[in-house]
Length: 110
Length: 114
Image (cartoon, rainbow over all chains, first blue to last red; front, side):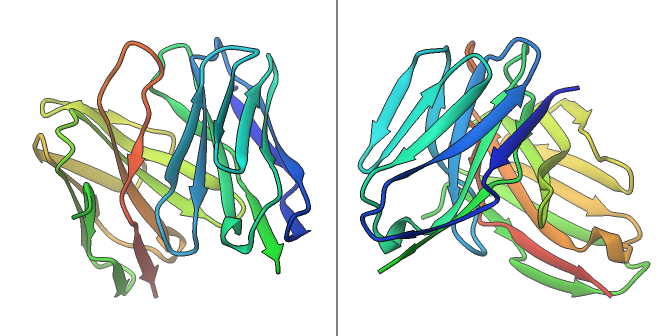
């Protein structure tokens, strides 16, 4: 059965304190790994898609990487506005069926 | 203007009532999805539609039905609402590409069933 897990469940950082969020997946023939940001009471906002092991993508203070079994979202020198829940999702062989992880709730304190 | 809109944004109803949640999109995408989100469980797929004539059940379709009225409109109905259907509901759309297909989400509907 396809499954996506994320760790930690919650993370508190001081402003400027870099860290990484983990997404582990077991999906039949991964077609894509997606990262989303979700603010309270809002819909998930698309951040990145990674298609193959070794791929990396960056956006401002965020960098996503992918291996054959997991993905990391690295946050460099975070700011309070980076506080949100970060979701990852894996698309299977058919490319359309998304399996979402439960998310990591990130709090960045000033 | 938002590309994916959902109405209503909040709804409180009673057990046994029929409820319809609506989704509209201006992205021109063929594919539309309905998810529910519960704390600690992540997003779970209820139904999806790849075009107007195509409707498919997702992981948790029991107790729900959908209607794809047009390319841009996809409605979710709860025929007889029950308290454990209290959740956040999200509509999403995607373009349909050869590679894995990015989904774009609406703002959500918070549904409470008393």
